Image (tube, rainbow, N blue to C red; front, side):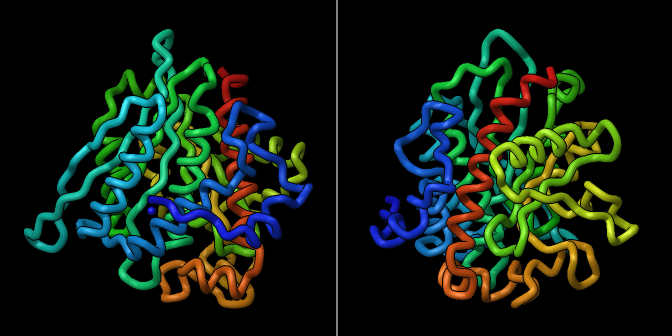
Length: 320
């Protein structure tokens, strides 16, 4: 997750649609339509590297690719190494890739995160090269913007084996850093689902989710939230199965962007599509399958999520 250029036909057929706004509408962005750079990252991670199992050579290659992309921007870049144990005593090594957009005038920060590892079937295009691509494009779009807080872009290793990277990162945070964290925005599996969603906490803890919904409404993007059909997951919330969970456990306000379908199956968001059910963790999690079965969906979702995330990181200051 070098970069392959998009085929001219796809660019003409998808990204030039007048309904798609450019990231440039909110910041000094590359002269590309929102989601185009994200697609290139997804293509490289999923096709060139392939599945990126935790602690594997492929996971290391993906992390190095991310670090190289972060180094191209005006960011402080760090590789945060950690070890974890599975079974009785087997120790594995992984690492988080971090890029910090620093504002020296404040200690306030927003954390934006996504895991870059995958399971051993499929190519991890949806889960979760998609989120890596969106964050990398957003980081580039905001690279020259002056914002009143730090942004920490964190790409977590070893999520698929128990949220290991996000747990390690959150556990290293001091009480002061936790207090200074405005919020954590998690992205996971953005391509396959029938609908696009944002979740947050209950009551006042849902303000970042509500900010995203407001942004989408103004941009006429059909962003939804969990409708609350399943009583285990109240309206607007979600489960603790992705990298937002360790931050939520620390008392940090979270928002979580995802594509799935909460109106089918057990109404728990696991069955992503009416047509094929769940795509994640299956051999269908490839760009080729997604583009054949859901024409235009990959590019549309990347465009929509890139717009939303970029604007969230611009507007979240209004809540300071």
